[in-house]
Amino acid sequence: MNRWWLLPGFALLFAVHLAVPLAPLDALDPETARLILVELRLPRTLLAIGYGLSLGMAGAALQAIFANPLASPDITGAASGGALGAVTVAYVFGLSGAVAMAAGGAVGAGLALALLFVVAGRNAPPARLLLGGLAIALAAGSATALLLALAPSPFAFYEMWRWLMGSLADRSLPQAAAALVPALSACALLWRGRKAYDLIALGDDVSASLGIDPRRLATRAMVLAAIATGACVALCGAIGFVGLVAPIAARALVRGHPGRAILPAGVLGALLLMGADLLVRFAPAGREIPVGVVTSLIGTPLFILVLLRARGMAGGLR
Image 1 (cartoon, rainbow, N blue to C red):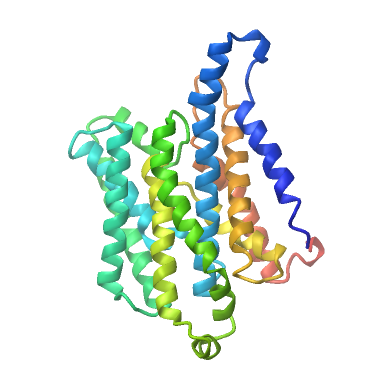
Image 2 (cartoon, helix red, strand yellow):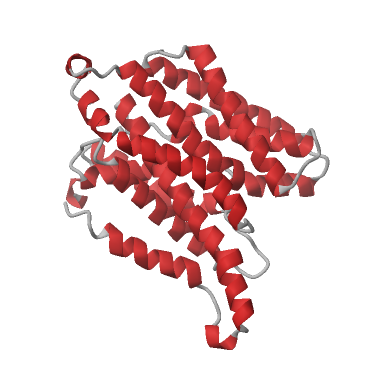
């Protein structure tokens, strides 16, 4: 299947996401138009691209090493740990600024990953890493819910809920750079190992004969996935379904090759997140819809369709 249509689609959505909805430029003061585009829209667009790319590529790598289309970046526990770290900084230490919460989220994601390797073992088999990541994600999610329940006011609870559901708004270029530099560096390393993900799909014996250790590859992929997603979660909150749906769609484009799906999954993830954030902007005046709600609404029917096709119940939709 031709994948090059993703490039013009990406360029078009990038331009639309950057400039819409925006009053005609000739109706705005030039300095005002510059401030809107550079200070408000550009960081938001770059974060949508970088966060979506990170989720898609991390999800594709994890689905490859676990040989499971249900694997997603959430299973490392980094996303839940990042959310717990941000909430802890806000309510335990009283630091509710964006930079402080981002720092707390980064520390939380790192601690969750470290705990995973303590619990499961550094060179544990993929199945044990999967179970350990799920346990840590559930524990961190429960701790976050407890902190929110003990929030000093319902308004604080609402503010944190909105952040936990994901938001790309009101971020500066330096903040975006702080999140995207480590995230995209990890994505580059994931893409660099794309051939190994294709080889491990042939089986442990074949990959071992070619000098690839599946356990070490799984550990490396989980670390890179945690860095890629944890850096973005720390700044923008948790956004679901992108890292699950984008890799599944990408594998359909590359005829099932897990390694070749890494980059297309990232591009599809960026397209999905840009589209979801664009829809958020058309919310009624005075209302703000978290972008994670929109990605869940978009991703859920797509995910159900994938399950139906896997069961052979949607053959006419192929």
